[in-house]
Length: 424
Image (cartoon, rainbow, N blue to C red; front, side):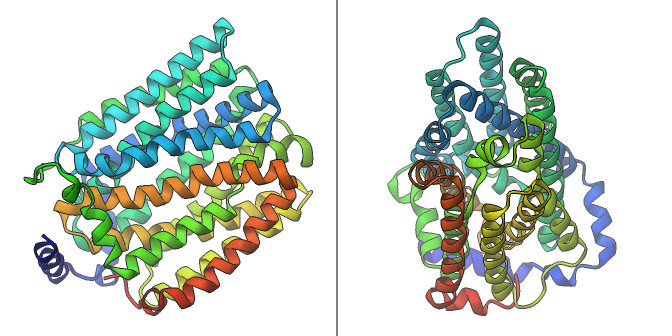
């Protein structure tokens, strides 16, 4: 099995033209591929709704409990089920139509939004209900992430993959910017308004995804532990991929302050739901600008060193945010974290897709999803727990300094990643 994977990977590399050699005129051809654009729009609306949902969920939980610990539990209750289900979900993504998996995840989130709408209007929106629905969202994300990551390479030419990922990232960052800002504004009129809007957008995303067509080649391997864990083995034996994905895990795990934004908004920066929406949108604004830069000027040389430098910048900007008591400076610092993080996203996803044969992409994407989920959901729990012990400022400062140490450590632990010159 390992021999056949290695052989397929080698042949795939021989057939792919380097992304840096794609003429700029080919960028416009991305917009002429209807299946790619249809899925791009489905992801856009889905992410927009998900970001609105997370703003409302966090603010409503803090309104109910006023507890940093409970904010962290929202992330933990999403991460736990996702961790358990992601590897099997990756195997499913290699056997079942990936578009239908993604559509099912969008429709599941729509059902969660409708339940929250009903609960809010009827007066039974409780801490326990929010935590229970967080479990459902975590399970849905476990299946969503491998399917969406493994689907994109089937909708574009291989040599255009880095630009396609950058274009996807730019659109998604617009949604991440608009979603929290719109969610915060709508929350001022009531949580029910946010949940109703989320349900409508998620239903639209599911319908658009069901219309995506591609040539589906299901894996012929029967489901067993060897095939389910094949993605783990694949990444473990490729130190560049292991270093890139684990770097993102520890950097965002330590440096993420998303779970504490309601506390910063209300107690430190003295703003309301609209201000919280802007704070959540600021990293996405920085990521959007960076994705546009990478789409126009793809990384060609010294990608490893630039990745490590971006993670160090992420940690430094996190420290600045932790110390800031000025709303404008806090927005700027968060925007810088988003720009730096987007370099990691594009480099990691491009390396994973280019170095993985299609028959393995679902399972390798599942491994990548575990790292992403751990860095986001477990990072929210870590932030909430440390904030409960040391206060929000101490939590963010410790995370930012930890991220700087991780970037320095990875330079020594993964020299192959640091020396990586080109994407393909």
